[in-house]
Length: 232
Image (cartoon, rainbow, N blue to C red; front, top):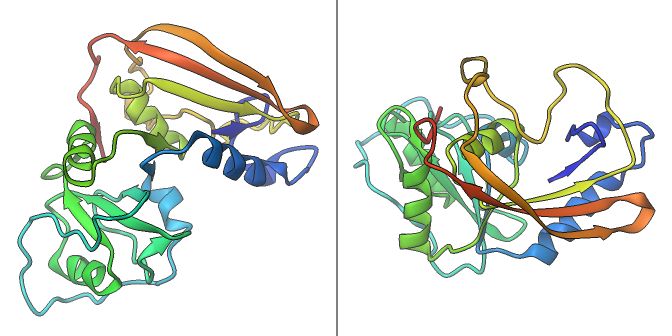
């Protein structure tokens, strides 16, 4: 993640307005590398090109994985528990889209994903089980290194589930300063009292980047998760 000094991640809100956040994010993403990257529904929606899928389906689809590709160098994984994103594209920046759904998603949405060539799988009946998400990506697509890249709610869900083993954070010389602005780690109101099961953090590296940014990488050790690894 790339954040202001107060931990905010919406670059357009930063002052001074440097425009550096997005470019720096992409450069560090490439440097870290990974078999796949993952974002939540709100962030995923920003990449969508369609308005909506048809409201009705002409057939029933089994609640089984459907993978358009298995041979990509990297995949773009999106958590979309209730099937709200109409993609209108099969990939993001050349990385095939893979959507994690719950079994409550309607058949019309599954038909739309298939038409767009968007892979999907199921990781829970009504809520996403994040552990099942990771197990599927590893087993079926060979993902060993997954970059969790926002937004703050998705990051927070993985953190509280004890599923993050490293934090990569570039801090830029800018501030947001507003209450409630999107942050690196966030939660829904119902999860605000849940604490991440982190037992230890150790600094792996610290690098001063161009224009005063600082790149920090921490290794995490997690105890038993304090709450179920579920995402809605």
